[in-house]
Length: 334
Ligand code: NAX
Image 1 (tube, rainbow, N blue to C red):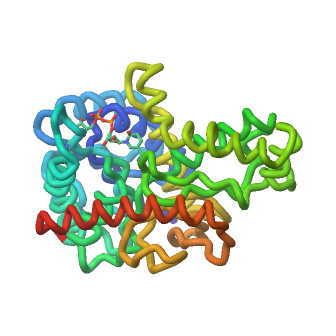
Image 2 (cartoon, rainbow, N blue to C red):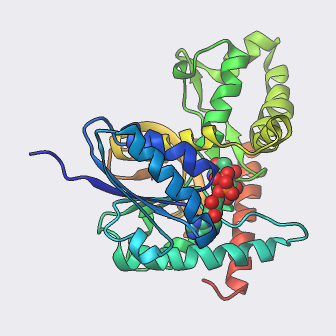
């Protein structure tokens, strides 16, 4: 008997990333060619027409795996029996908006959506938050669904991970699939730490490979500190500057890979998950770590050594996450 269709809810489906996501999901690129899907597109009233337009185009693709598409502005309808939720829609920072205003505006979105997930989603719901500030939005959503195990809530740092791989392929003359063991730690923000200390290229340590290409260990470390880390951490701003608009297709691609690897399993990638205190990250923060999955959710890869420089960078990004959590608490949200 065929597996029953999986209900997938996409919020902000009428926006740019939504448009880049829907067709790939419906084509089977996220869950595989043997899993039928039902799509639920959640928008605010102003975004409903755009989502309805995407739904018309989905129909025109006649995807064999796509069983239904429903557009709604009601979270209780959107998340009803959902097995997977991609929370993409968020409130962007407007002119003159302080960080506290941004957090408050997003708490007003991710709190109710988390509550709706807790009330009506399938028992095995898995959630990935894409909308920024993604880590803290995931924290708010998880806190608003106390009956859903918090390890079901994750935030996207796979785009940062893929960006870091992309930079290394250039520097090392390697293909993406020849690089492994890279990690993004901390917040999906400029404070993140893209870490190559455990990374390997064609079986060799990435740091040693960089040292032999760049003329020594000191040159490799200087390149990592002055070129690689800032470029990965600020890549979103670079894309806006060059393209005149934020990352869309690469973000959608990363979200698809995040869900695919969570479900199909992977020995190593990066994702923001609820900390259980791993590597001294305060319990409850949604922090990016190196993770693996056996097909039943991401788990932090433990036992990696961290030198003082790595520790300091991780601590700085984790301090930013703790400050975001405290700001949200001060609003009375958590
Ligand atoms: P768009 O502005 O094109 O689309 C956002 C959509 O969300 C709009 O259609 C809007 O109507 C809808 N929306 C707003 N509030 C909603 C709500 N309460 N319920 C349902 N829908 C709602 O933005 P887009 O380029 O698609 O980016 C979406 C989010 O992704 C932004 O927050 C952006 O900052 C974030 N990103 C996150 C990345 C990551 O790696 N975690 C990278 C890419 C991107 O910057």
